[in-house]
Length: 225
Image 1 (cartoon, rainbow, N blue to C red):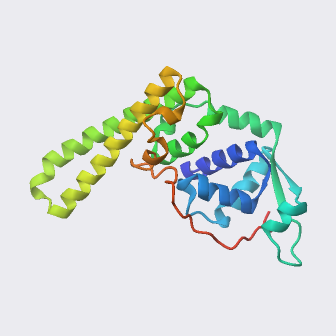
Image 2 (image 1 turned 90 degrees about the horizontal axis):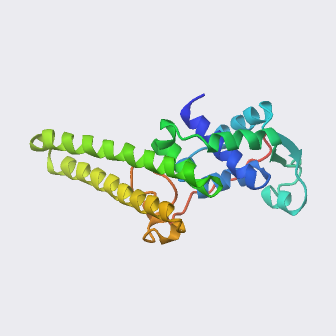
Image 3 (image 1 turned 120 degrees about the vertical axis):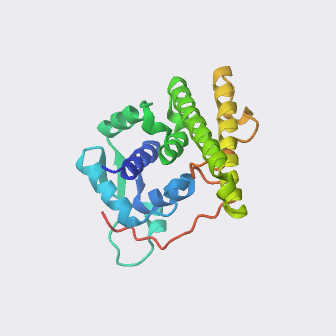
């Protein structure tokens, strides 16, 4: 399994833990809540759902009622399939949620993990945040060393691009410091300088969407299963 498909499976399980959904609603939630999935297609989502069903982590149910009608109002379409998390799926998601290894610190993985911090225990949140900070501090040190070695050989635009990248990583490190301090003090995330939601996308993660973002919308094709 590729890292990206693993992240998608994690995110789908997390969203379905909140409530059952059909494919169109799942894709919409992934697009609007998780920026890392903003450009993915139904051709990516439905194979993932099939795999989760085959593993016994999801079950398929025939959709009905207003929610189903809103999802695909086209006449002659068969009932929408609603995906529901099984007990085994919930257990598997909780196991994934507790993992704090190096993969949790990577750009796309961290963005997905952070989106489900509300379902994560504080000690796990702390380990992931501290691991992410350590990873970015290493990255920042390498970027600074590289810039020092190559400064004289770079034109102004390339130099400015490298500086911009460094500043982005520096902003995310500051944001992580605020979050870690808030976690240690037992404060609400909103007390972390008021920057948490905005600065998640300031670093290299490409993470969660900024307020005011306009994720692109697509014509739903929700009859796949």
